[in-house]
Length: 228
Ligand SMILES: O=C(CO)[C@@H](O)[C@H](O)COP(=O)(O)O
Ligand SMILES: [Fe+2]
Image 1 (cartoon, rainbow, N blue to C red):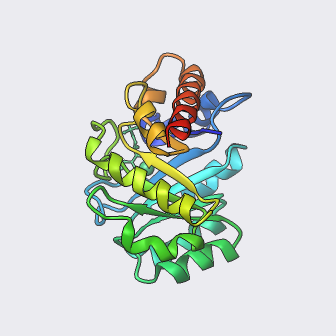
Image 2 (cartoon, protein in one colour; image 1 turned 60 degrees about the horizontal axis):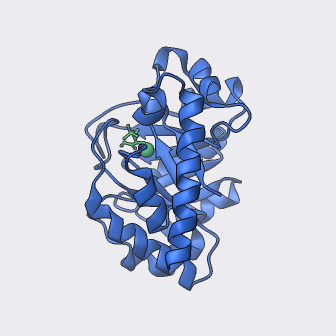
């Protein structure tokens, strides 16, 4: 079942609770994607723990926090305490990814690790059982509204092969430039969780955009599984 996680990076930060509601409801978004940037790991600055705490209180939708920050070993557990249902740290930034994934899980959230476009998945094969989700970035992290990088498609396919070969349950998320014109390629390659910022919040009816992206992904995913 394909999941669509709208990224609030493309929403109005002065009305986050309303923006979350605009994509929720029946057949709405599965999770809300919250991009945390520290102006060190990426050249942009967004929001931190207090905003996640407020969003948690103001909305029902589970929060998928994507930490584009240095020293996630120190900060990620605080996002679980703030109410995140899933916390993603970057492989390039974590000092002790196994210990960190275990800590996130022990605190009660789903543990997830992200790979920038140039970071290969193979060195992390043995670590996959420690994770609930793997995020393959399909743009360089830092900004919404960038063009999808086709060069990441082979890595999505390799990640799907590794997950299936080990019989793992973990979700395979893609993030960056996901839209009506790119989501099918991602789904065919084996992704099952799709972050979409501008494609959802830039649409006239964001909830309808979520439904239509999900339908596209479901169809293409089924075709991809049939072909493999
Ligand atoms: O993590 C990031 C960017 O670094 C993403 O979550 C973006 O927010 C996705 O936005 P679009 O590319 O879908 O507009
Ligand atoms: Fe993100």
